[in-house]
Image (cartoon, rainbow, N blue to C red; front, side, top):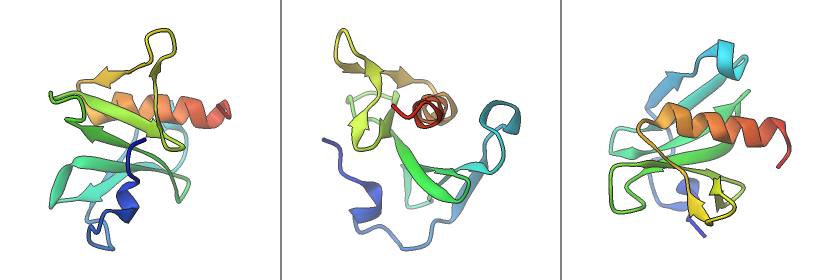
Length: 101
């Protein structure tokens, strides 16, 4: 199970905030993170942490999505889905969240 980024000893305040497309995500969805750890971003939905995306967990450049402590991916292969950028990884977290998976 991946380790929650809010318990990794990173600075308390996040200094990177990237608004996510309101047409896809709805109101007030943001990727937030730290300049000292650019490969990790928390997905904030309507003011609350919903999950996180992290690059390099597979040893490569792909971004993995983590929701409720678990990687999101292909249930048949049990492999985490990897994305080229953090936004599509955040999108599957958003989908899992609104569908209460």
